[in-house]
Length: 414
Image (cartoon, rainbow, N blue to C red):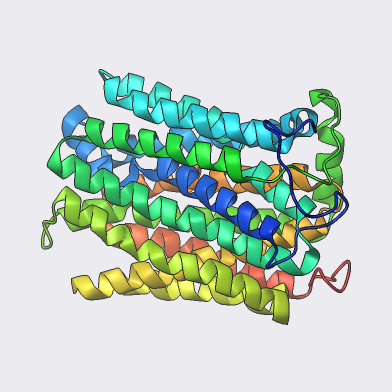
């Protein structure tokens, strides 16, 4: 039994083979990682539509309520830096399984919390447990997938994340209106446990993983090497901007839609997050398009779409606000899919460390921009949120244009 296998697992492919699109191993991998992405992002973002509810229940400002997400993503960002090292030592699959099951149990435990401090402690602990999945899943795909299949596989994994993010928000809103936010989080935690068991059974064992001893003091050297690459720091910064804009808009749209002139209830606000469905399509489609045309030639369009979406949310009609969210979501998931496959190609043998650095930047964008957006909301309303996120997205266009001049390290890297 390999070190990263939790149960005996027989596959028809030879041990040296990479996973190709259309094979049985590809289908099992996509099922497993789709379930993992679904659960991870449902567990992470289920609190987002509940922020106005937290403000009412615990007498909090919008910025204070946003800590229910920022506390998780802030801890998650730092924990990502060492999660890759643990998976290098103990195997990709065991670390991901433990991560998913522990995070599900913590979410279910939120139903039993008594005050806001306990909510924040539990959510911060989730930052630790969730760190064992996103970066390692990306490393697993980069190691096990054939080069021509990785863009599609990464896109489908992110598509599962999109569906999970949507479902977590939707279920949280609907069950909160029907019962309570505690009941809603208990249901989402139980759903995460089911997805964790599917992931455990379906994911094929690693064929190209070589375990390395856990030496945390040695993490700095590969990080320095990666940061000296002419492209990787820009890709990491792009992740910061993508996630910062996306989370900030979704954090405070619930406040806008639950107030005048819309006055939507929790269930209706949760249903608005159904626009996440476009992310399932855009992540796979733009990832595949970037693989064909070149990532440098496609990436800038993601930030342009995000800017268009932000602008549409300024308009008054609800249909146009929802359209703006859909365009923003399309651009975000497409951009994230492109960057996720891009940095893995440039990282060479340090894929897990590169994933950790990228996701550190990505979730710091969520934590920092997500909290700062609350300050803009409290002081200037929705116009302030739009101005703040619009500035970040404009900076993202500049980063994408800078990356257009990046010299590829191989014909497949773009």
